[in-house]
Image (tube, rainbow over all chains, first blue to last red; front, side, top):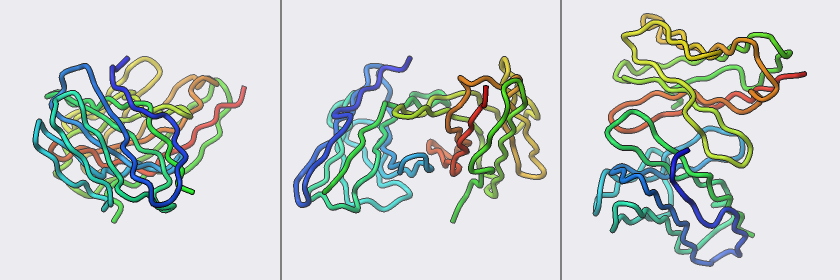
Length: 111
Length: 110
């Protein structure tokens, strides 16, 4: 089983709050990704990083931001949460191989 | 614009039957085609994958069939079991990024 962790697993928060979703991996992978997924629906890439101090926006526009200061850590931040941000957020990582390993996800609800 | 189209959206199969999920793509730059399995409350996990220079790959009860000329690939689950009930996603890779299909919710009736 892949060693990639996400916290919190569930988060209910009010509109306008700042939130940070944590993602950490212990595999030493250089590439990390954030996906947004509505329950049971397809995954949309919102951010990715190919290494420390490297971040790029994905195919789906997102108001969130990311940082990559350490190889193992790739947090996602929303400065001002809105109900439209309600979704599941999945973090993934990969090395030079083909496979992306996914974390368990954070289910975010903004009221 | 949907780059990878997956069908059906949902599928019900009797225990012991064959489950078939199909995907089609347009971009010939894709160079790797994985299938992911996702259980409720979990992240997707790689099930099986194929490169476009191979027409079929089998791992246990799971087989990918790949038709490069038609730009289609499919997942076959033989002897389907209730434990196979999950959502399945096909994907295609370009560069270091994956593009996912819409997902198929598979239910295996006992």
